[in-house]
Image (cartoon, rainbow, N blue to C red; front, side, top):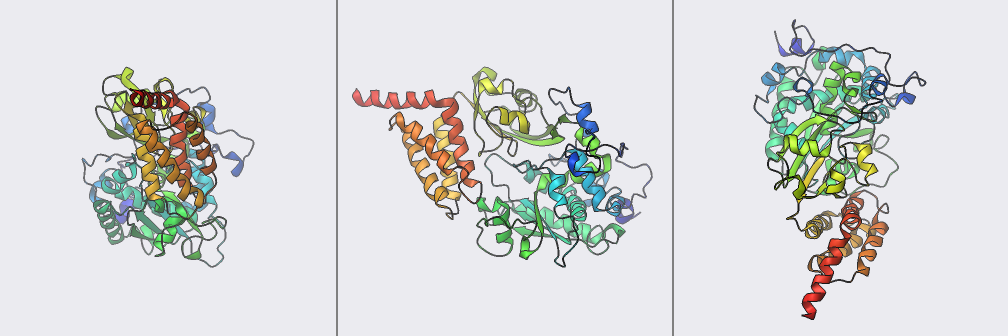
Length: 479
């Protein structure tokens, strides 16, 4: 039996069990589907659900996250990748998009936009221009390394996801943009793509479905700003990576002036499993509007830093203690956590005790889910210096196109450096807060917002520490 036959679903006694679900269910975006009056089956079942986790092993999507098994095509087939892919592709764009909507999948790159809605923007009659799928594997956010694990340990899951997502959008090709520093990861992706071509899984007549689809790898050069979707498109086109003004949006004028959807590695990689097991299966995890499983990066002052797949809406405390061995020095030694990568506001221990890791609950406590990169800081951390270091990063990575970003972040960094030493006045704390508000939402892209929010979190929750640092410096001078 060859690889194409496996993808066509001809192997009896499949390795992966495909769960059958009622087709009458709708996703939480039911207004975009046929039966607008019905609630989703999953939301109805989860109506009283207060939290998520722990995730059972049989429900894990990424089964080679730690690279313990063969990442090449032979190993991927044993783990169930490419199973009945032909059937999924032949069901067509509308069916795939409907399953993604039913699943409640939201973008895993930080913004959390509903994926079914986003993919449907491209599912419209062609105007003669080709359509493209662009997969954002730039992943330059400090603290974030989830996509890297997929690229190097589970590349075929992404290749298959590109084919299915591309079919949903009517795309003729996918460009996987990989961060320049990820040399080995990009090499693994190239090997996986070559294997898929050789096996007839992609390319002309992909999986024997009659659908033609090509995949290319584009390597970046280390610029953080190229993680922004339009800057990424500019980079692929060979231009300087700077964000474009919107509108027009990429779905209308994207790569090479053609309709384009830019989406995250993890978002694409989960699509095949959703289509095989059913959108309602995926939606059964987490709370309403926060469905599915998610890759979490846990770093900082923990005993066992790791990347782990868990259920959405798992309590932050449980995630850290179950998978990362707890905070160094114990939970009572916790100072604060940055819950979604460096661009999300820090939250103190009092919030960490009860908060759930999902989009809605983190917004409730004035932070963001982001990329789900959990950065833990214990009481030995100089929290002011830590946030100042993040601002230094954003100052360095700003493309300089927008004045509020270029000048504002520079001034933020200058003030934060003085706060680190205590060489400031108390009223400057309010001045810094006002500066962050002048930067926020006044630029082409969200880089400036990502620089402002950590400072806002610092002032909101750790203002007494800043004031104490200023007082200590004044006391030292007077002595």
